[in-house]
Image (cartoon, rainbow over all chains, first blue to last red; front, side, top):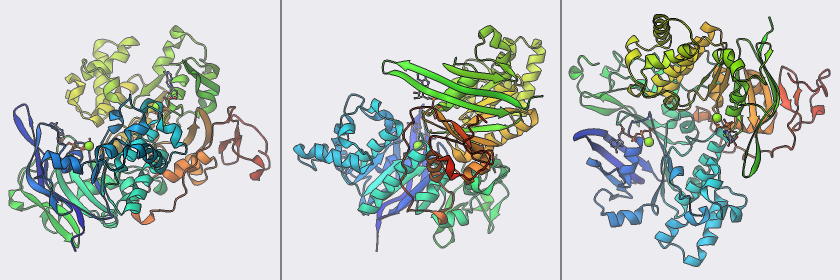
Length: 327
Length: 310
Ligand SMILES: Nc1ncnc2c1ncn2[C@@H]1O[C@H](COP(=O)(O)OP(=O)(O)OP(=O)(O)O)[C@@H](O)[C@H]1O
Ligand SMILES: Nc1ncnc2c1ncn2[C@@H]1O[C@H](COP(=O)(O)OP(=O)(O)OP(=O)(O)O)[C@@H](O)[C@H]1O
Ligand SMILES: [Mg+2]
Ligand SMILES: [Mg+2]
């Protein structure tokens, strides 16, 4: 029955900065089923990357998981020593990091770079690495793998480099692929190629994808399930059809409403300011957070996710009486 | 009064390095009418920014001519360009890089007035404060520095600075690409309002076709340095002709999961033609690069074979 490949429960992550502790991720629970693409969407700084880095235990050195659990195929990852995590990273769970293009080694042929993982995990004999690399290059859409094999990163365009990163990430055939904003810097035609590639990989291997993005258009095209993040919390989650048809949290509504859509000839875009958080309630419950501005949104009282309809969760304050004089 | 504010004819800008000459903009002709917004789309490296910078004469073109407000400005030297620097302004993608971190917002806004020797100290300050109000920032922003502002607020400051000289023509180069969607909408709405209020003519550059559609009256598509298609936006989005335009439009993610299409055709991008294409009118103010279409396919009597520079 339990098909969850990844399950995060009540995760809290904090940072020490100038001797002060700040919470970047709070009470985040998230699960991914086999064969699913799960989208994590939210504004800059909401905690998307930190959540995913926690899975691989790759938090920045001043950050730590304070509580919660992360299981992969039923096994707790947070208790695993570094040595065991190394066996999992790149092999069973692999991640395309945000801004990873910059991390390509400029002095190494891309064909050699994409097999580093295979070499490390000793999945293929040495003499077969090149054949494997050529296959991977073909798989990510290069028509002339032999030529690309010998190129250095600087000789490739942004879209080509992003495909190299995908080749690298899928080289060991991971069962979970975490893609952190894999297309933000790319234009639409290349974006589509890259996302189609990830989608194809997922389908072919019955793998799962955690897709981090701030583009609701991308979510609509590729995701099965959606988590909306704001200020370190999940504020709404549901399957993709429900989220679009019946968004409940004002922040989700604002995100969906602010997408320009050529098809409906909008005279004016809705912006986040057109949505009120304050004094709105749902079924007598008060949304958390109660106020929102782009600069700050604060969860100033205990809150939790409430099931508003089957399998559709929205964050509300636990006790309405505590919500006084905010902002 | 002439209805055209900007006219570019056969404009080319080349860059050369050790690998040879790179034709960043190659034989582009277009007109921009007073009060209109012309959107420019195209993939990264297609020459959008270079086109904008050449039109405002930050670059000297290799070939071609540019007219602004009825006067040719192709060959003017820096001194002669000075009055045009006031009338043509640019809004940049990254407000943080284009605004000095050492100056206060007040100083940033007043600088263009100072350079153009406009007004007294007091008048410049009043002007700056009224611009702050226009872009929806509090008066006390005047003394603050840029690092105290969020991305969306910084872009408002960038817009205030570009508009303080009351230009006739504004080139907005990816003005919202660095912003979160939730903030993007505010800045786009603000730009639209100011444009109407100040009667601005605008060249709006972006690789986001949904954003361009929202902002523009007509849209020009660049591909590998060439202008390959140009039409009123509704016409272009309804009836794209060039294969590159088609692939661009079919790649826009549709924000509706019910309409997801897993059987989309793969994208095949055309090669760059040897010579700059000629634009051909195919009706409805729709122009498309002639190298790519067989004109006979279009049963448009009078415009058949007629090559037009719009
Ligand atoms: N090394 C660090 N030290 C202190 N705070 C940090 C550190 N890294 C991240 N943070 C904070 O953690 C919060 C969440 O950051 P995170 O990178 O997860 O955001 P994000 O949702 O991925 O945003 P973006 O869309 O910009 O990538 C932010 O407030 C950020 O400032
Ligand atoms: N100052 C320069 N020197 C040399 N080459 C340049 C210069 N500016 C642009 N180029 C080249 O000219 C071509 C067009 O660049 P341009 O910046 O105009 O493209 P763009 O369409 O604005 O792309 P993007 O969407 O990435 O901003 C590119 O190949 C670029 O490398
Ligand atoms: Mg991130
Ligand atoms: Mg550019």
